[in-house]
Image (tube, rainbow, N blue to C red; front, side):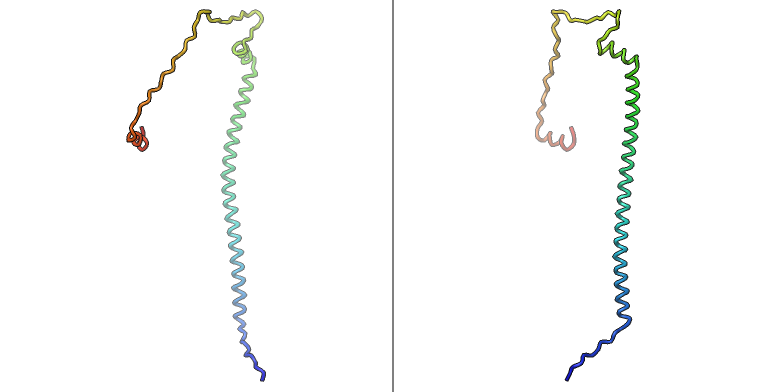
Length: 136
């Protein structure tokens, strides 16, 4: 005798329900990935905005420094500034000028300033701890 297996009844709604659940699951996974990507883009945008503000501030500072340096170069290149340097630190003279060099007398003794010795006050351990916690 051949044994026959009873056929399972196919439920047409069950297969459809499984298909709908699989599609919903895949859709949910895609939605989570999109939300995560969007969140990463927002975080990156915030970081780049902060960096842009810092770079703009540094650029403004550098432009101010550039303007100050250009003004200093213009001032240093003027005839008046060149002559002031030449007669002062440059120790130069024009024709007809009398150069005067001050020389110290031969018997002059250089004055030295004595260094004061520091006064060390020894504190007890208790005073050191009180100073540590409550200030001197």
